Each structure stands twice: as C-alpha cells, then as structure tokens.
Image (cartoon, rainbow, N blue to C red; front, top):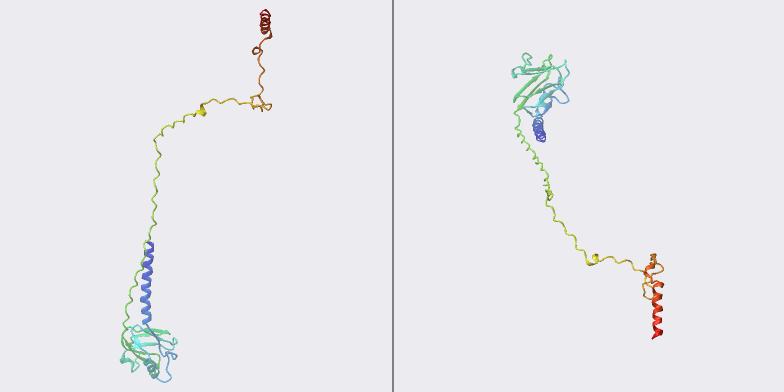
Length: 235
C-alpha cells in the first residue's frame, strides 16, 4: 500500500511538471528595446516601432521594461490616449523598474511613459498580440506496472510417523548346539615324545601323591605267597 501511494505521488508530480514545462515553453519574455531598454530613444518613436516589427507577441507572453525607478514609468493606455500622449486614466501603470507586463488578451496594445514629455519625444510602444498557439495537452503518463510480489512456495512439512504401540513378540533364544552342550573336557597334559600322556615337565599342574590305601600292603600279600610255595613242594 505504501509503495502504491508513493508511485501515485510520483506520477502526479511528473504530470504537473509536464504541464508547467509546456506552459513555460509556450511563454516568451520580450525585453523591450533590447539593449536600449525603456528610455527616451535617440531617433524618436521609430526605434520602438522597428524593434516591435522583429517580434511575435502571443497571449501569455511577457513584456520586460528595463528602466530606472523615479526616472521613467510604463502605462498601458487606450488608442485614443496613445496618439496625443494623454496620461490621464491609464489602463494600468508600473512605476518601479524593471517592470513585467503579461499579455492577457489578443489585439493591439499601447504603452507610453507618463513622466514629463517623454511620450512626446518618442518613448511609446505599439504591439499586436496574437492568440495563444494551441499547445497539445500533455498525454497522461501511464502508471507504471507494479509487479505483484510472489510469495515463495511454502514447503509442506512431512508428517513424522507416530511411534508404534505394538509390543514386538519375544525372540526365542537359539537352541544350544551339540558343541555347546558337551561338557568342557579338562585340560590335557602335554604328550611325551613316546605318545604317552605323561605329564610334561613344563606343566604347572602338580598331581597329588597316591593315597596309601591305593597301593597293596606287603603284610597282606606275604602269607599268600608263602602258601603258594608250600603247595608247590608237596606236589
């Protein structure tokens, strides 16, 4: 909304400037007498008549009378007052120089200086004003096209799946293999070079000595031996 208001103000300002430019371009400022200015001409009224013949006056133009305040003035008078330099009842009068007079109507306009006998000496001017030239109305400046801002596409968030409330079935532990079921055999002693299972000298395991009850007693074996010898002598 703020951008639209700003653009509207800019367009209006450009249109007003364009109209003012055309108006200013159509307006012409004429410096009366050029370098002579508005003074008593040295060659009589012909000096201003010659100057006016080189100008084109239109409604809206401006006449610039350059004179020193207190020494001259400029009064617009009727045709009847112009020839005899009648200073009474002028249409308008400017006493401060330089004076600017805007031409507001077409036709013949008459100007004189009412100070002393300046008008009789030749300080007078007659001009013919034409209607203002038709200036084509400025075409309105088209409003600039303001692109509508495009919102960036909004990414649709992917829904996060809700956590499952189903309890997974218990996993069965694998059946023990035959290798796992067999008892662990006791550590074997190192074999002797002959293949017997004699304990290796390097084994750190020390076997307990055999109990006395496991060895045969000499007292129990001796009688049996003597009996066997005696029977052999009899037979």
